[in-house]
Image 1 (cartoon, helix red, strand yellow):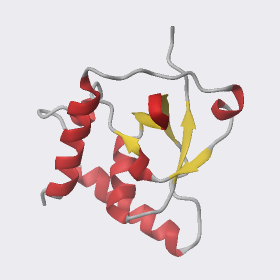
Image 2 (image 1 turned 30 degrees about the horizontal axis):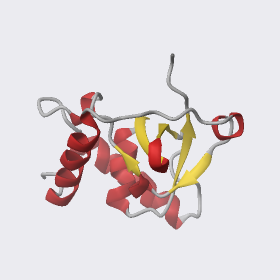
Image 3 (image 1 turned 90 degrees about the horizontal axis):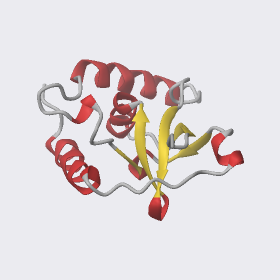
Image 4 (image 1 turned 135 degrees about the horizontal axis):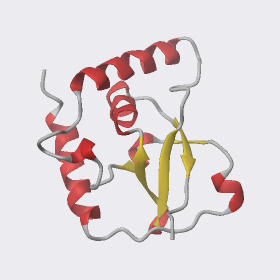
Length: 124
């Protein structure tokens, strides 16, 4: 079962977009210490993460497992994914995923409206 072409196309476009142009923005104290909910469509894959590497890439098995969990949580009105996706704030209020690419892909696949995220600041 191959990942949907639309997802792979979107991921490749995001990788090219952010490959050489990523200006991180420092998030404020409250932003960093609260878990917030955000539309998974507002998140972008990190071009430096192995998830985006052609020779490694996303695991369809893991994505399907997380998508199944997300659909079950939606049916039971429970939070989607207990562990928040770690993201970094970028310019123009965009977000790059630091940890949680498979959960992000599963959220897109399961069409969940929001996922829990935690914003972290880049190290100096």
